[in-house]
Length: 282
Image 1 (cartoon, rainbow, N blue to C red):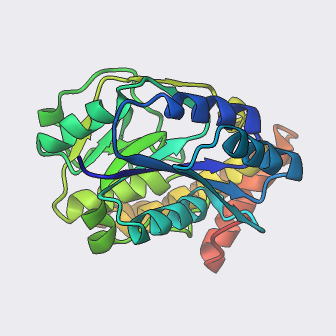
Image 2: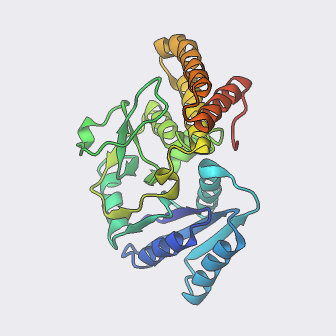
């Protein structure tokens, strides 16, 4: 059985992390370990995970704590590097607000053995010149997956060779669009995406619940501009300055009339920092 390392990223929300770890403890797959990366959480959330690992005598579970928030991409990359160093043949990136079924890994591995190099449970459609790329509620046959699709970072099983060839998650994004970018980059390198029926319960995260908040809009717009510039076809790159001007003008009008002023200012800041090349954490 190939070894699977599961990387679970935590930023506070230890109650959700512990529920996730309880489900991972029940996995039936014989060769796996779990790396929890704590992304500079408040101390009580860090201690909660430490206590769980100690009291459960979970020797296949380890905790890696960092002193500053590395974001989704940076935190997961730390766990991925640790997994590769430990000889993992597959890395499973898993959100901490998920609860999996005992045979979850077997289902992912079965799809990988059928020819997929990256296996996920949710997909979305790639759209250019768009600040948000919502996930699809539809099902999709593996044969129908194309470069017009991406896999959600909620749960991603990735063969180690992909990281060795195309690199890790792009840390410029910090939050949002990194799963889209990684899916596209891997496909352009010749790797195939695969889907499995969800053997997982995914809670609505606090960040998703507050999608309209200024900070999240900042990352959505800044990262969308970066993604379109980096990976868009020629016509997207031609239209990108026009789209950028439209974003700026629209937000300035909204500020002038007093409509969602804080959100508009955050979007403008995202556009400014994109032009300045300021990426990573806000």
